[in-house]
Length: 517
Image: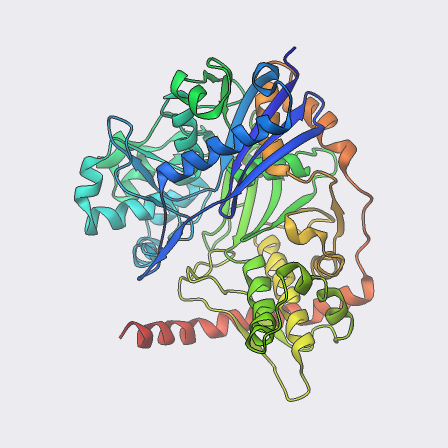
């Protein structure tokens, strides 16, 4: 009997395959670390063949945990890390390694295009600000610096598109990535105007068809069946980009409460629901994303700060590095266990931290590839616990900064991502935004969101709202009310946070100029 759905989530850190029953209960999971490399000049690349091999391996590992997995599987859906450029030739072979969303080589291209008046047209069509991580700006950089690579290419994918191709042999992308990069979010298709503004109309032949996974699937190929241990012909569904799938699994599609949704992962994503194209609110700074949701006419409007848990890893790494120099080893988990005590021992908002620790700078709610992290207001009375608290507060202020760029602050935030397990982070975030925080018992929201798309595609549910009612709503926990006293402190500090990153922008530019020479 076929009674299982599988969601594959190929993230930046980990590639996972998760089995769910038809009511959304997680049955088993298999995962393997992802592998990518950073290069001089801001490059970040990933081997396509290795990525496929790792994804296939997780399906085989999942079969070891679930009896008769292949014969019980109704459908498999795939999602993955967004942005980037993964080029293949006419025979389906990689032309080069995939460029990731972490790649900053196109930063100069972004500054140049954003300075042109016609970029406003591109922004109003896509609903998305231009950033170095996107395929459009990476195309321009490649045209100027490595045209021979583009000449060899037949199709430009994103990560999940490549895996879908390896599973089915079909070249496609989904409505979310297809339109926020090169399209019109209102039509959910490519736009010639956008391609013209970017100066890449001559590369349109590289863009695969836009395919909606809620309505279309393809059969697992014989070659992919041999590689994965699954049955040839099993329906394969191309999910939406990982942030959309995660938002779906975490509860953003709630037309009654209209919550915000925040993902605290390697990057920070902050989302509001727009039920119609007219509900999308575009800002003057031309930043953020508008992504189609897997429901007719519905969109997730997003602002994304480039680095979230990367900041936590950095500040905890300072302490573990010092301990290691003295022969004392502490795991990342052991360090994280100390965080709540450090935060409890420190004063709120006693200094500011700008959480721009990524080498790619910042992309929301402002775009600046030169942006860098830093503390403001350190005095001799501050200790390590104060620095840790400031880092967590910096992530919360960045979230508020992002929500403010999309309209009124939400009254409730659905929080997901690994850091959502931290009581201290939940309390700080809720107070900084002035919102109740609600988390889900769902551990793998991204894979679940992909599987939900497959569930609608194969007809298990008549609509995505119906699927949400059974897969998502019952798993939401009780709301944790915002701490009013702490919220009052953060309200007073918020203007200083904004002034700090506005004032530091010429400093970052000057520093980048010196370092370039």
